[in-house]
Length: 353
Image 1 (spheres, rainbow, N blue to C red):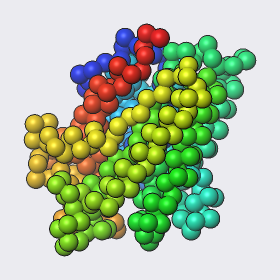
Image 2 (image 1 turned 180 degrees about the vertical axis):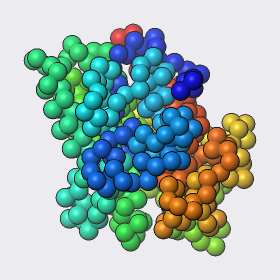
Image 3 (image 1 turned 30 degrees about the vertical axis):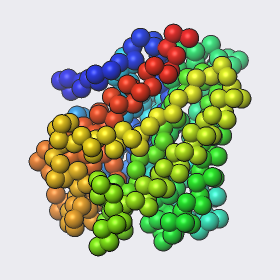
């Protein structure tokens, strides 16, 4: 590792000395590959995952760094270690995000005939891990220790909807999950506040209709199904509904906890900014909807042959692509989204409070 990519905006003036992350594959720095034999043998343990920055797979679902890594860089912190890494000391926080994690508990999804195929480490399980961690390092309560900590509750919820779609649920059936998913996240926000958090960022979800795996599954000749960026309107509408409900839930928690700073992270519009300004940002405008690492079809994605499997092609210039493997983003896309996020939250996070 010769150099660390930088962010144009920094959080150093906030003097955060710890970062705590809850979420799914968009934030997982190595929990999933450590939690089960299935994780330990998954494609995330193979090149080309991790090749751009680390030169080896780390469990990150990308070719390099994630948003959470760029947040750490901007705050002047080391990369935050995955909680399942038993060799870590977690001096600068810990990361509980797990690839495949859902906002709803696996049992609740199962009651709706939706399986969670990768992991049962849903948001409530991650919060239990966090409680165990704090219980071990705080003598009484964690209020003093966490005065200078930044918490990310999410992004999470994408898998609840994606698993529903991929297992045959209709748009309406999947949209019906939104109140429960948002309520689970709202409870998560309240729990980290109970642990002692006073600065919390709660990201919304990305536009689901812009990802190659959904574009492949729901591909249609109906031009009206797509928006100006060739994303699927009905899936993006679901993302908008989730994000609107989540912002309303955040406002409710703010009323209950006026002394806590809670900021919404607008991942949805950050992603659209990348699509809108793809050429200026250095992305290949012809391939903004295609996977860099994938094979076949109009979106370079095949459900049966994924990135990391034998015979799957890798693009020559990952930094020219927004999407990495059909499900997750490239390091360059995460970097640009992190910069947009920091630019947005910096005036709202009350660094000097």
